[in-house]
Image (cartoon, rainbow, N blue to C red; front, side, top):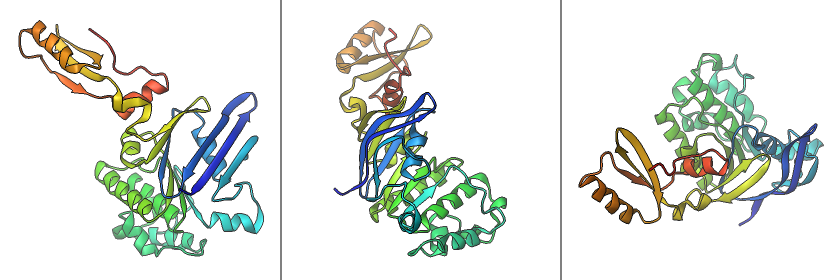
Length: 288
């Protein structure tokens, strides 16, 4: 697969604080790549460097074959190929949704049709409403519309579904998959682990300025071969245990209870369980 983003030995500090420590990764064309990590992990700094909004202290960064710190006409040509959905923007408050998307479309050489974009994000019926009059979730959809109207090769999404209700989130996920299927490479930062699991082809977990692991959501942290998590109620308390031989564990429990085990559940670790363990926050464990 063709690399769209290549990073090698990236460092960035703010005074004595090392925000990014020797980060290296490759993101391939046509994939959805999610970056996960707690606040202060270095996600925002890394993405801002990729977007050309912040300069690295050292290391090599290539985005669509270009150094993001490039200036002049070459920078404009490069920005014509990327789309960015920030956490929030207030620049279009006095414009209608259609006016805002139409205005942003003029910045690009090969934009999508603004009406088509509004339909994609579910704002067709709000096209004549001013941005300031939209609800929080609707405003977020407008932010997404502004990011994709340029028909970008590479799209950066920063917490894209904040403020969405469950139905809107599901619809947005379908849009992102559609963009990926059309060939758009997508870099996603999100605090919603279910969103990363649903969308991402690969995920990178960051903490303390470093990448802990890069893998698919299904394989991250060895979760495909992880121990089963068994929970039940005993003496009025929910207890849990981890076992790589859950059948034998259940037989022993059943013998202890002389029959049915109260409120029994069995599951493998979720992406959230694995993620929390990787960043040093305890999840479910032994509690006999």
